[in-house]
Length: 173
Image (cartoon, rainbow, N blue to C red; front, side):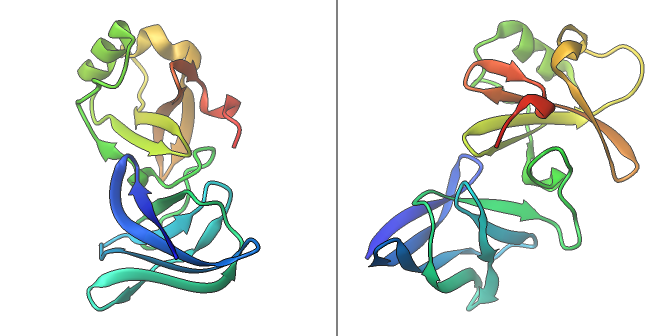
């Protein structure tokens, strides 16, 4: 049996145990229970929704073909994916800590913006915040912002793929 970490963003929150051979595995994933819906994702596809069991969330499947890298797609019950983002808006967490960024102007602009959320998913950092007409501390970066309409509101979003800033629409996979 092999054991792998289960990530929510950059935080390890659980584990995934795999047993089997020839690309087919029995999978057992476990993490602390939450008020969110947790879906286990292997970087290519969803492997299933975790269900409550003994105070934890658990996903148990037999004969699974998967990559050996595991993340949580998190959403509130009945919340939908905020297309073109690959996840629901609740996946991200509000932050003012942008120490992981190298671009000083980007750090300064994001620090001055309101309600900034960040989600690490699929090896990329997605940053998004409510968007409104008028002046914005993010003005120097309008060229790379994608505007998303979701739940009756507008959000501006972009992706960091390594050190490269990309619009959400230009991110593949």
